[in-house]
Image 1: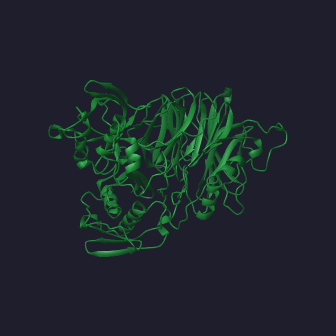
Image 2: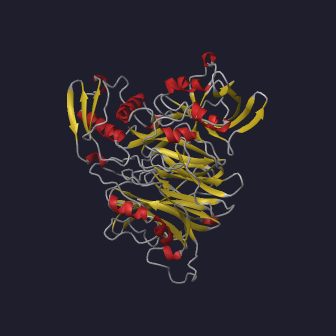
Image 3: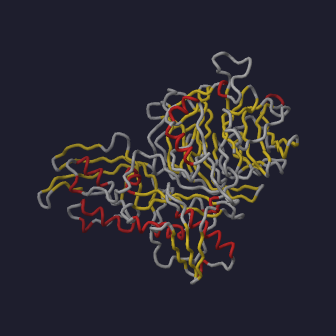
Length: 607
């Protein structure tokens, strides 16, 4: 499917939802690199790309407006944040806040503002989302810091100096999530995967819109040189330790970036330099813009990189391959909808194996298809079988052994490449492989209820005790290790479903304060959250959620979502549509009820 065709489909989204399925898109490519690229993100609303600075103190006419502007004033480079906030204070010379910029989400309903004799008394309840670093990452607060806080100060109208001012401000620099969404440009950096250096792994950054557009490429390269986010670092390779940028990287009028690095960036290996060029081009790639050409200069040696070979893909993204939607119907894995004519398809499961299925995962591997099936076993206990289909009529099957008698197995998930998968067994996360007889527990606490992996296969999102976490995956297939988990804050509670809706965005299902089901998209750091979508199922719990990450080279919005609630399956974008047996490939099977509602379960995407 071409980019133009996909955009046309997005314009007709309402009709597609009514039809029951949403279309995905594959990444064109010529190399064997898994690429995660920037796309338009879901947000609170349309962001004016021309906006560079938030409103100042004098723009506020009420105490509430002044508080809002006060929480946006720090927007910009973190090192000079205090200088931008001080004009809100009448006597700012003595105010010496901590240098770190705290990104906060204000409690629903806004701050409490009451009139007093000396002005307006403000009680600002917030959730700390993280610390905005010099490289534009939002890192979590140390464990010793409270996630929730109430800041109290006064807003007063003075005669000298004239106007509304903040009196007795908190000794910290606060930046609202609204300001982060509005006055920063989200950019995706890319780092090569550790151990195999075969996959580019995305890492989210925020570049201030105070910085002129022509200077933002320089900020992107500086952030890349500063290294990955802390939680992601175990899974990726940083640039050479002493590598540094020489001069600036002007935004090119003709589409070619010129990046000059110090000699320390040269490893003496031409393949390493080529990998570096691919990494730079993806990190400099403008959202929705043309593919950038690059002239890379290291120690006076110039290399020019053009063309689209760097857009190549593997694993979950292959040229001309869209994620295919599947489900389980009457104990069998079934396609949802008919794939486009001529598109490459995943192999069908052998009929003898496609029975008694409760949940499944399929992916391409080495020119064939590999499946992970959770089925009913002896005594009704679940079992996990891996089926490798190497070609027509050729299939091998292995039953995976666990280190305990398993009472409950969640839906399996394949990592990119199809050599390793993950699954939740009785609240513990295990890795499994067709090459090994036994599943291996990951070093994570128990109580996990759901997992999701993105197309790069080096990151894990999971739910534990109703809360959301992400962690890095360090792979030496078939062995998988996991980094330290990072909690991801969200406005929803009692989370029951998670998926990757964009390269660096998650979608979660949970409960609002009134107990009703809702879905939100949020950045992988939890710092920016979209408006809620899909609230039509009352107080039901989501028992299963699957998401398809959209094409990183396309400018469309959030990815597709399928979920199960009240034992009914739905497809979700901005609204829900129930999936029925009539949505199966080939139409409604014989023997199903006339309503078409017949045990569609465990929907998933495969590629």
